[in-house]
Length: 208
Image (cartoon, rainbow, N blue to C red; front, side, top):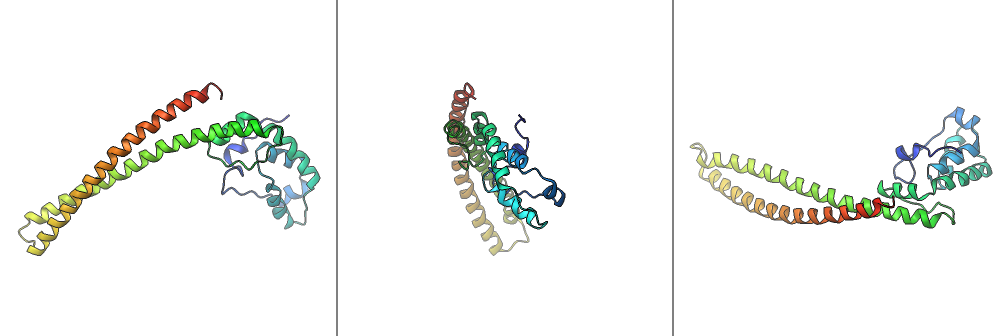
């Protein structure tokens, strides 16, 4: 039996935006049962054969559907194990309910556990991203306030320019105050999300 295909990690239809083609030589010399097996063991959905059909039609080659389906069914039995379901969930992949009925429940349960870890991790990283975004904005506002300060003390600035600089400085200060308040709230959220993530990771570590 072949080992789990590395293709799953690099490019799988469980993930969106991934395409596949076959060359002219591959289409004419392919063993469709082997192709089906490799697609199954990589966790591809049933729509994968459509891509092969489209790629090979240009060369006048039609897939052997029976051989492909038999190979894919065999490959799916290797792929549809809990460890792979968990890995798919952790990676944020989409599960297309392609596993056979006898293996689907355990696979889906493991996938859901991995997906939950993915979601909890994203909560932390999203909060960190929002905090970083606001801190960058504060830096930009501080630079703006510094520039406006030069206008306020400039002997060449007009009264209108000084008035506008004063308004801009006030608005920037108010915006920085709101941003700092938002950062404080986001930091509390991030701390809570991190605690929840750590607890969940500890819980699933014993299983996966």
